[in-house]
Image 1 (cartoon, one colour):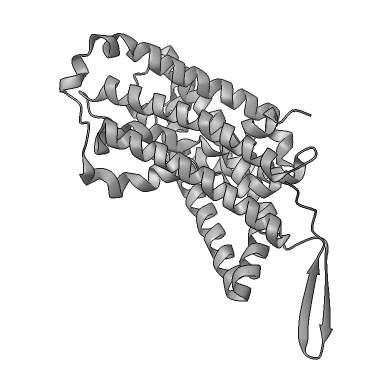
Image 2 (cartoon, helix red, strand yellow):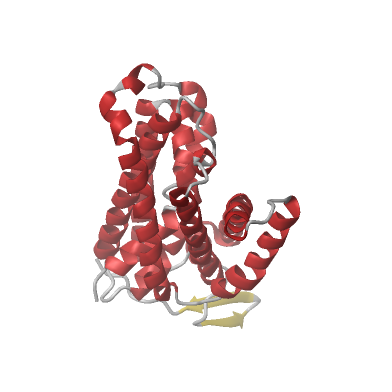
Amino acid sequence: MSSFPFVINIVNTAFGVTVLAVPYCFHQCGLILGAFLLFASSYASKKSCSLLLRSAQISRKRDFESLGFHVGGFLGKFIVEMSLIGYLVGTAIAWFVIIGDVSPAVVSSLLGIEKTWGLRLVLIVTIGICIVFPLSLVKDITSLSSASNVAIGIYTFFVLQLFFSTLPQIVSADWINGVNFWKPDGVLQCLPIFGISFLCQTVIFVLYEALPEPSVKKMEHVVNTAMDIVLLLSFTVGFSGYVRYFEDGVQGDLLNNYNHDFISEFIRLGMFHCYNLHNMNWGNNSNTTATVHNNKTTTVNNNKTTTTTNQNNWTM
């Protein structure tokens, strides 16, 4: 079995809703500083995944809670669990905000109805209950690789359409005197956005278990390949989006800079599908990380509780 489906899953996990904010971050930080922060975030994500895998190999633990317990006892486990919950809640909030921005525009354009706050509320509730929640209960996230391929195709179309529509403006070089290249004032605002653009740590252990003949080196290769793809796509969107719309004012959600023509509506509809799949990825991981180990036995002896968990072997 090829490792390509695992690369696609990681790319789709990391390359989510935040990519639409990358041009705004380039606008706030400048092209050179923004690109540097993007590359630094990609490198930091690679190193953190490598440290997680190697620490798991040494400790023979295969999830965040066990690692936290191994390092810091019950307090460490509690901190890890609260951090995961905070991350998932924050991702859910961001996802629903984006869905609330995108779906009313798509539906009102397709059905010819007025875009109102009531329509926004109905769509958020309906999509959340009828689509996202059932799909988030899928246990095996590798089964989503086919849908991930569709999402990657939509992302690729979005990136290429943005780049080639901006290419004449890039070649003309008229933008050089109008854009910012170094603007440190925006670093504190944009650094969290750059960082979350490469967040894939929550899927590392799940995908490792699904790898054929899993090893740390093989998983590191999968992660590094996925992060390079995400870096290339994110930089292309950030650079092209900033150069194309810097005169009009780059919005926090790049789709707000788009017109309401056929191509723009198609991209919005495609992004709507990608957001749903992105939400499925972190929803499935919440099921995995929030579940206490399945293969575990607990014994009580002399008022002390000892927990033993059957772990898979970790190999290089």
